[in-house]
Length: 396
Image: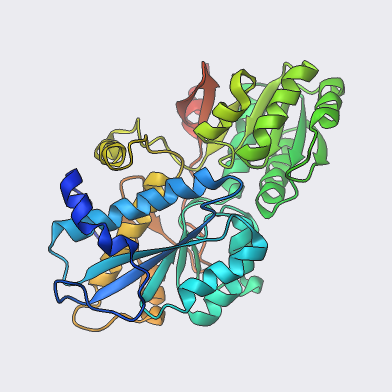
């Protein structure tokens, strides 16, 4: 097993400022750093503007911090540059965002894409370029199906097969719900998550009512009334916080008092801010632990807050770990110049012990692991509860 070599140190703010230039240049013609060392670029693709941008920003910050800290340590035989490409969480813009990174000959690997829809759209081009993409958050189960031909895609997080199963386990075994209303937003992510949750609930003997409501629906009142009148004990919304917030408000207005669930796409402080007190009591799942709570990520959380003047949030720590994994694999080339194809092969075979988990992949590119965590909104804050399997097993 490969050991973590580049992350166990704090980064003073002054040092961060010195290395920021290595993270902000987009020049693909200069492959030498100012120190004379060769430089290699790690790309990053996510929605950094538009709907649900905060989820992409969380990851971008985590990846940037990893690059800055690696350069500041000074013991690498190369300099790492960082180049972001904003796909606005849009499938239609994902291909051009990917091409920006593909066309830069110094980009040796990409962190992302962050969202499942853009990942599906961009992955054929990345596969053709043999440019590895390691996503911290694209969880749609279908992305790793061999027939897709997404041979450059590696999932750095458990798929929604784990998250949907965890939701169903909590609802059926912990809450003992008899009837659940499941709503998806018709996106690649929402449809995938809801399907797993529905299938697992049905296996547990729970009655399921389902409906699809497209993202950016102007009025969630009708479906909220339908949920209220259905007699459901609980509901699941498989979508992103941008739509989850107005949905939560309408559910409250409709008077629905059952348990309310959503996944990692809603698990962000923006959901609470946009929904206000209508978010109170919502359960939110994620194949990610809270980096601000877990002991293993305390130093990271402190460094993140110092660097970005904000608390680490959903998938920040995972993006940090994955970036350090890429940097470690760059180091294994020695005096040989890294190639995209070589980098892809190394990442596929690597096992990296990060702060959040051990990262390794199945031959399909699927993440090798399945832990899901649960949170609940209380008093305007998202409280971390812990590992669903352990909490359910403990009973109570």
